[in-house]
Image 1 (cartoon, rainbow, N blue to C red):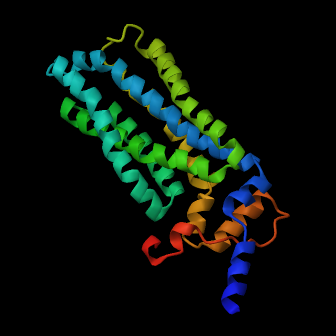
Image 2 (tube, rainbow, N blue to C red):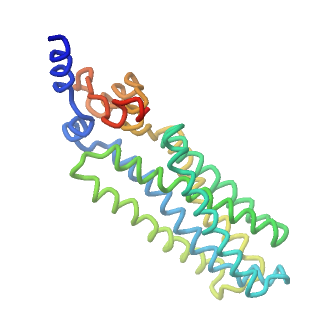
Image 3 (cartoon, rainbow, N blue to C red):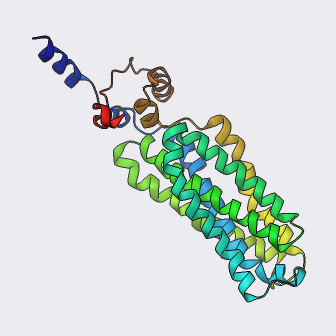
Length: 255
């Protein structure tokens, strides 16, 4: 019957993970890991920097007692909480790549603005913005890697980008040695803000121009032509793909 023939035709279609496994890892995947890992690196740099420069900040802003210093550090994590809560819904609606790019942009912008902050109150708001950018971007970066890599490489590639956080802390530690060896030098926290925002500023144009969209996102949103073009950039010999519809979209409830 027609129903049986259609069912068999659907069964003959490939799953996306089968295509990714056949294509394997390419230089484009390496670039994706570097760009997404860079977001974790920027995260680690900012997290260590804000903890290291509170004493230097207190020398310039007399209203900063122990409570205010703790609140300044906590505002970053509050921003991470809010950004993380929004990341999934935003990424599912507009894509992983725009979220990553926006996160890099906000990190660079808020980081530079922190360096010229005139008072403690504005600094609080800017550090919240830095945390929000991280909370928004990091889940999208991890998802991008998982959805782009062949299945056998997903665990190692995820470990690779998460290692970026540790390198970010080492980078921030180097900045402390250069600008604030005693962590209390007046005014040097401004240089530290610029130093910690530098990775985001450097990687931002690469994320904007070179980072592709997640193949899973393209499939779920039925952007078939873009998905085929992406796969062919990885493997030019690939034919036009016929991929099966994700099971969570087969019923109206999943749309």
